[in-house]
Image 1 (tube, helix red, strand yellow):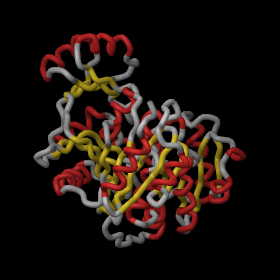
Image 2 (cartoon, rainbow, N blue to C red; image 1 turned 90 degrees about the vertical axis):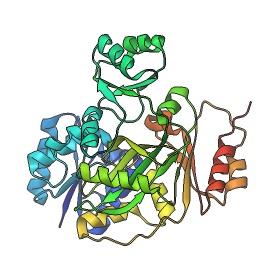
Image 3 (cartoon, helix red, strand yellow; image 1 turned 90 degrees about the horizontal axis):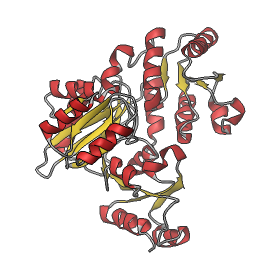
Image 4 (cartoon, helix red, strand yellow; image 1 turned 45 degrees about the vertical axis):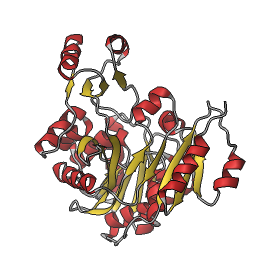
Length: 388
């Protein structure tokens, strides 16, 4: 029987689905986290064969003790995962030390550091935005003199748009230099193309099981910085240039048996430039959006790929699906009841979002779907209209 260790299986809450599908596929599901067992939800507790609690998920000795314990009681560990960007480095280290299939320590830097991603993109013949890690004010000024305003400053290692700056003038530069955290920051030229994604799941040989693509109403950095509302759509047909760039990126980073979330700039002439790679699913409830768009269960597809090597034909995406976020600090024209009265036939899911994700994704969301694009865009406009 396959033994799969899942790190931090209790966050985000919908990731319990990975554990339930692994158990249903026939795996031993072995959890490691710092959360008290009694605090785990009942569904998760019922689907873990064993739960090893550590005091601190950042304590390497405790994690290794947990891995040794699980291996002694269940046999060789076959896979370890979290599907969470935050734990990618931890996963890769444990895979290296315990000889487990998958991304290992020597490969993690090029997918964690944006500066090293650029080198991989360049070697693959793709054309990322010009960028450089700048550690001093002199280096910042030299880079801006080279590419001009505006520029984007973001942590070289970081998740999402938190602590990301758009520098449009000299006062912005001075404010950034005063406030930025004491970590490596990379500065990039600011590109104005449409931000799109290339997402999906690949098998152990790097072949896509399914793919999808997101279209955002606004860049996530701007949504966080401006405290605005997000909506983003999974499209039914992906542009050939996005597919071509996405497939080249899969090959360049040698992605195997993983979910992936790549971001690109798409320009009006159809050309594509890479933005960054993430070796995990897109965040929030996007996995649920895949399920609603295709009418399948991507958690099940992943689990059965790992455990049983099942590779189903999934066909084409059937629906446009739109995530529509709203924030608690805003007043909206439509109430929850009015939204259901007008758009109830489109709504396939609605729920509160984790506070940790709310600056980008909102505190509450509605997910709508339709075979045509315009109805889901119209729903977003109405649901996010503010009351003045």
